[in-house]
Image 1: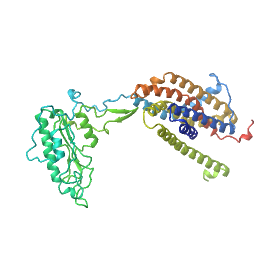
Image 2 (image 1 turned 30 degrees about the vertical axis):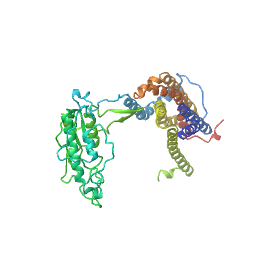
Image 3 (image 1 turned 90 degrees about the vertical axis):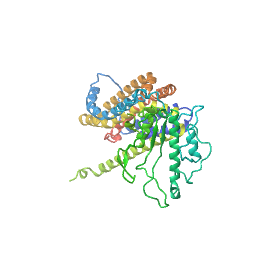
Image 4 (image 1 turned 90 degrees about the horizontal axis):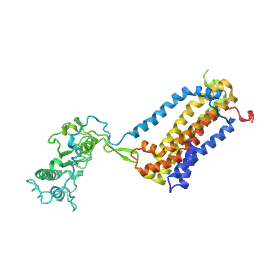
Length: 296
Length: 172
């Protein structure tokens, strides 16, 4: 019978709505009325005759009550529980810490980290010995707050998309990254910004150990590495381990949501907090848990 | 002898027809609900008004869902028991009483909910902003009467699905 209510409501929305959301609500009521009329007509046609009159002391009403108590309790329990569950969930305030194992240091709340611009007068560090960066590498190393304003030219011709022949000169990219990254860290440290700046080197996927048909490397989601530096973390360590060819994780897996949660945690943001789109809770990480050992 | 063979041919065909109709009606209800949601989404998109509407609709539609389950799972066996004890023609009275009870109960509930619509919206959707909560409350005041109107509509199928005698055999 919902088809009548939904159909009338959908028709009303299609015809009248577009100006005011109240029209949709009226459409629901109109649909419910249409459904009631239809069902009443069907019941009448089937022989049902409405008997008016209602009194609390009515013997028939008492008997109806007795007959309905047990089935009503059994049948109503599940939907009532679901409604109650929804209400209880909606009462939960945003940002409740449901993960008591996570306890941040007391001063993390005000340690909002981020890429901080160099202060006026701060001279950028000289490039790391042996650094001959491409244009992107040089821009990133000299001012972490400013994106390079010119299009870069990767030394291997294809950038980090190392399929096919792009693989052949990957070592140039690695060399460039290594030099730019170390220069950036040295620069931040020298300006006493490293403890309050979290540097993240991340990727959305890795490369498999074997070559693809074009001589390059394809995509691998099973295991890959990412780097965190600075941010007051206990860095200088490797978390997790793969097999000897880097195909699968064999020890201490860290998921992408865990990595995101770690970044949020380092920024002083509760990674288990929900944002709200209207009344819909949207978790800021996909239920990730931070890597606790790099905070201790 | 199987159970099916004990049912007369006419009864079997009626059973099959009723089952098919029920199945079709359930499928059509789901499809029409999808069409309704799609039409709301296409008209209003995602935003303040849609959020307010769905917050406003949560409680009245949730209560209607409770009534629907109760109607399906409680009223039919209850009316059947009554009919077995007192005869088919005597069942009009309890059905009417149930409908009146649903109507009175849902009217009282809707009236009370309309009075406290704004705090209800704030409680059921704490993430909603003040403007959206006011909008949701005004939409909810329109939606709440869907209970008194739709409630008996959910209860009556219980009566309509009873093994009624042919209407022409019944005194008018």
